[in-house]
Length: 212
Figure 1: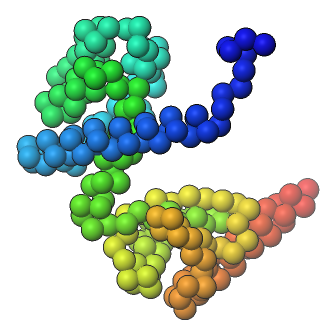
Figure 2: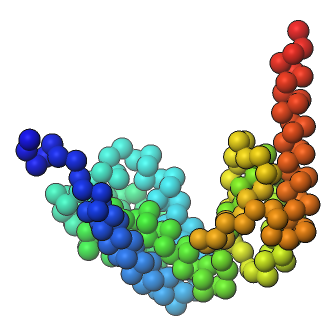
Figure 3: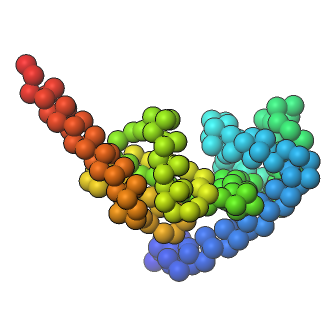
């Protein structure tokens, strides 16, 4: 069996991931510093996030080209200008050019994630993922965020995820710590309400399926 046919060592893959994560943090910090100095941190992050998640995936071959070491820096920078020129802030464009010159455009998504986490840290926020059995409307999300923040004594930057298989109604993951709805009375009551709501929705679907 030749080397190309061998399965990559998981340890090597883990080391590669750690190295990429460290690099992403370095570039994220530089980008945030420049954006804060220019007074456009939020706008720069939004533009970079939009490019990474919405724009580039829709441009044929863009992600592959940016990640390829065979494509010259000049070609990548020309492609950046063609896609973004006149559409983003100078700070955003400069960040992309820096990544291109250092052959790190393939890390754009990781850099954006790292920059978002670092921005939250600088604002005194901790990232929290709220996992519920049913989708929540905006008023419910705000109520949930307020109750959890008060119960844990933390300022939170929330994301919301739906898991229909969740039986407990509510799970809150803050950084590396997972809380169920028993961490405080308010969370327990809210979790019970969400659980009851999911039960009602399941019963409603069953009733509809049973209707001729």
